[in-house]
Length: 228
Image (cartoon, rainbow, N blue to C red; front, side):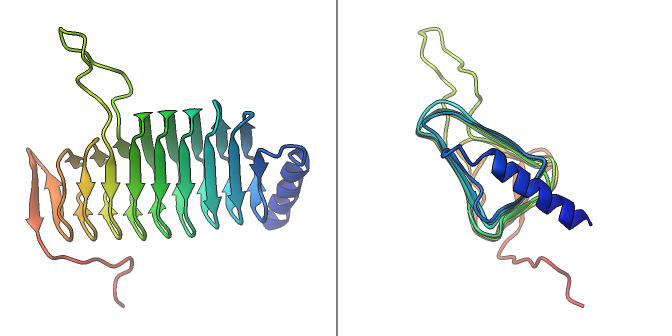
């Protein structure tokens, strides 16, 4: 019965949006979502499972694209010019907030990565957050590539400019982790819960943050499930 109700809502949402070339829901199963896509922008959500989300795009030349993804209880907000959010196949986003503002900024999430709860913020100009394939993120995670408000020195020069974030493939991030701007986390790394990542993390290392960020193991690997 629940699947039937969701399919009815999906059909109703699509019928309401037939006249909007700015939004494509081709092949998607939709349930109680809200869409606000301004002129000159595009939101293409294809073959996705979408439940209780808000998609809001204003400005001009901005795009959200997602294919074969599961997105639940999330809010995507883009404002400005020529910004882009890309969600690849098999991604699972739960309780996510993604904010992109400014010009020429990108957020990309690689195939088969999953999130239990995250806030991703990219504000500025020509800045990027890239997340690799098959990553595993717990909940209450913050990923900030910008401070969102400028800070100036006595000469009027901004001293806290935005910087890119790169997270590699098969990275495992525990709950209550914050990833700061300018950080690269290498492939296969593990970030322990409660860690504040302010420096690069080498591939296949476990890092924790008690007083300062430190590596506790090297050359590790991880699996999604325990061996039986």
